[in-house]
Length: 302
Image 1: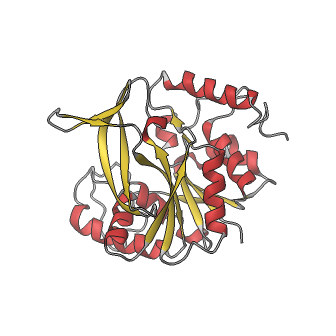
Image 2: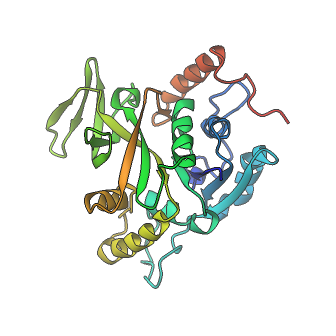
């Protein structure tokens, strides 16, 4: 059975004005998600599940989803504020989505096979998808064995400002021990640094392993997500800006010894459009990959 790719795209409507405009990075209007899906299909993924919002479903299907009709099985799941609350009363003033782990959880009714998770607007590289597809298609994925693609920190930083990164600590066999979220991570000439809330600076080498939200799971993970979300709601549900990040249930499971997460190291360069100037870098990177033969000039021939 081929693995599924779960694509977290529920935030695209707010970022792109209801999908009226989406930043192109390819020569024929391709956006970052096009290249991720192209890499995933080549790597052996057999199904796409888009996590979106109801209010821009029609625009998303027309502008993005329609490209893949006839190429690969496609399904949709919806991250709404009232999804999966199981009796918890939604705070009347809550507007912020519940976070990445909640977004993954809404895909439970569409996925019965091992699956990977990505952000819609991040570029991960062909090697990353190949490694993850091989893991999910092989004997290593199980009820207690998951995976994460680990990027070198220096390959994920912006030239134009600070970013937030999940810095991973692994054992000698490259199994994840924990993920520590660092905000205000900044690129430096010979490495990087991050700043505490009080402004204290801490040096980083740039070779640290970081998570960019490319995870691989057995479908049993949905059971853990549901239980973890219930606990999260009981503790933080009344906070209007609290978020159930994917690192929360993963860290809980790893630290309690219930699962192991194999870190798959990649030398691919991640990029996204965090700052306006990042778009130019993304376009140059895609152009170089096209010139080098990684991608055709036009991805989708209809």
